[in-house]
Length: 338
Image (tube, rainbow, N blue to C red; front, side, top):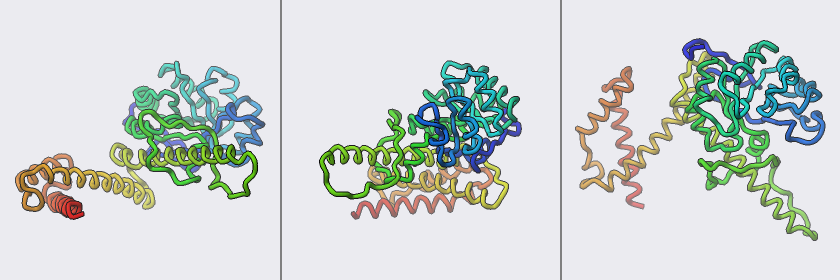
């Protein structure tokens, strides 16, 4: 299917996946990784749930927004068939060694078994080229599971991911302690486990063994902060990168306002960056500040921008860029006086 044709859109827990803005889906739960009966693990509604066996499926049908065909058992055809037949949206993860054709073939099988509400999901060591190819070839929404490395969120959105998936512990951790902004979510990734943080520890009287408890509490707080940072990184990626690279055609006033908010967020980020660079320029020019403005360069700048934004044109862009340049110069002067 050509990427220019109308794309599949699948609704998961109120989120429209596959058209418009990219989304963050927090709440993937794997019953294969959790101990205990499904009814005890899923005491509350969850977004994406992977079964461990067919016995889990009735609980998933009642308490999940979508069922996950996990990468570890895509060849378990009886379980795949039963999961696809629940009547829920189906998220088909790619087995690490699976080719594009195998991945898309399994998605088509699930669609035939339970309806066309099927989403593809790339996880583990993300193959972003394959993610993009799957989206183009199938027309289906494609998610990127960034639970193991939130630092790949921006790259995944840039590659065309319709959404980012975070493990349940990450999405729950976002409501815990405020994230430490010094934490890194870069290429080395974030090492996180499945510990849920409900809030700050309750003070209590000192008892023997409190040192171990304090160490455990400190570890939980740190992990909660890292979880919150992972969620922040994912949300920033869908907002900023999505605003720059994902075309949107909102159909309602609220959707239009949300799209404008995303563009404004990206615009503010770029303006702040431009102002910082303009401040550096002032230290390198022979004559800085307003006296050092170069009208010829500014006209060339507006002309280049007009080629990217022909509908606005030079006449409309000129006053906008003049205001941007002046704001940057004022900021540079303020910083010089500090």
